[in-house]
Length: 392
Length: 93
Image (tube, rainbow over all chains, first blue to last red; front, side, top):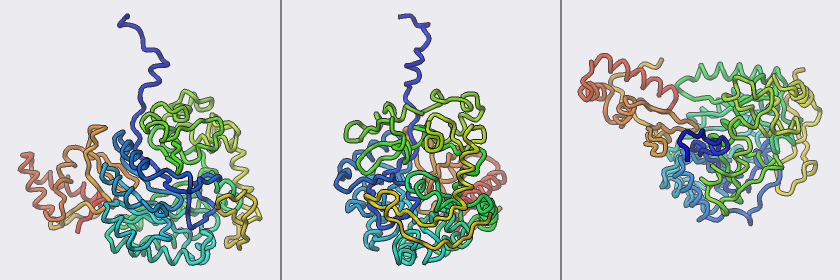
């Protein structure tokens, strides 16, 4: 063996990737709400196929040992799992930072007390709008908003830190200031003003959700002003809408680079929409260990790094900054997941995505397709009243 | 910038954890959706933010421990605490 031999590029490319920082555990797809922008896939996992308690615990242990820091206990509604306290306690015990992402519906105060006692680090509560009636309409559940208010008061009484998460779309974009005020009123230290990202259910509902460019610009101005006014009191994190953008978002911090998702059935995904890329093969935690899937799983290797790229990404000085944007959005708009994200102004499909946004923002069809089990998009529609006339 | 009083007793609120990351061999400050990377001096400050010691006591302690000019340490510590307070990862009460 010659010491001077250069490393085989094929082998060099297989050097273990850096450890992921965060893991989203979709404990269940069951949820009392049916928000039309839900990030879950259109085909939801059934309860009968959900991982058992011991498997989730093993996955959390593996995640901690490989270097995951934040564990997002999500769903669906994660508290719909009967073992949520046991799972949380285990995650805390193995050193993970535990974040409960909840609708706040169907959670008894006793359950929240048990979670707090188990060492839960943080609660993230969704709200749908500042106006209770419209919020309930978006969530597809009457009375949801007022129950969230009670839940938030328990979170505070138990001394748990609270983030309010509001997904922004045409039906609530004019209420951003009121939503931030609710976050303050609820005692949150942090609020996420997260513009809807168009995958899964949100893609099905794009014409019901897309705001106009003018609304998006105004919203950005409002967020900037509030950030300044509330400095030191409330942290405002914004997720920007990308159909009107010039640069793509560095989706999930780069494919297979910082984070991973585990579905209720134990399928491991690089992001929550990855299953829309049909040629990818995903591994299950019941077949392989989490570190093995992360390092060697074919779905993770498919778009990790930059070697899969085409022009305009290949020669782009930003390719290590935004990693070509989002693979799922590239697929959804261009038909090819290896294309540059069309949100990028350098993409040949950029004009198409802008045109889609402009068309949908004035589309005359404000009837949500609610997130449901076995709902074929196109069925299960409920007529709602549009409360914001388009600006254009 | 927030004015940090010398009498304040800073502490990390629930939901913010100073943690040694053995996998990456570094110190971390974990907060909701945030990972901060404190340097050795910042770790020394944060370890003293127990909600009991005042800023004055923390500065005195550090000046002794690092044999450094007290005035400089006070300026640096207050700037750091103010910055963390704005990020809502530290309570000054």
